[in-house]
Image (cartoon, rainbow, N blue to C red; front, side, top):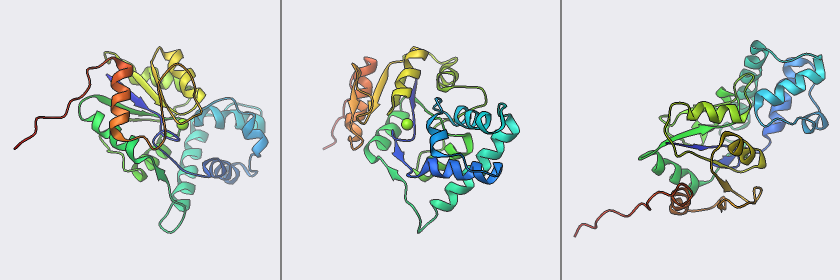
Length: 221
Ligand SMILES: [Mg+2]
């Protein structure tokens, strides 16, 4: 029963992430992609975005070696920017706690558009337990493909928890119910605020999946 969580905007955020992405590519490609070029990209995963920018600059698609070089360069930028004394990531503490509590009794995955090494870095910074599987952006896969990979071989019901319309669209395309974090994904599904308490997240997941509510254990006197 994989309950899949997006990372950025769902479990926390790392400000200036797209600046670091552009700078990393600038260092590799000799010219930094512009904000306008980035805004023309339609994908929501690092592979899709870097591939689109590569096509704009070089007129051909990205390959695995160039994508790996991007991942290495980008995570180096993040490590420098978010080093002690530098920028600080923001974790949504209630959502993070709720995810960890769910992981004690359910299969929980991170399914994110970050390149795998960047996802690993961000998950570690946010204190996410290393036993929770992390599925980052893979070559020639969109977000729907990633979700389908996480679900493969696992019995349902499944769920995607995300913060953006592209998360909702991917959940629909993969046939998953959706739970929104923040205000950017209105719809018929349940939505929680970024500062939701762990209990609220767990209750919303259980309600969305039609699971019996978790009850507190018997008190000991
Ligand atoms: Mg997100």
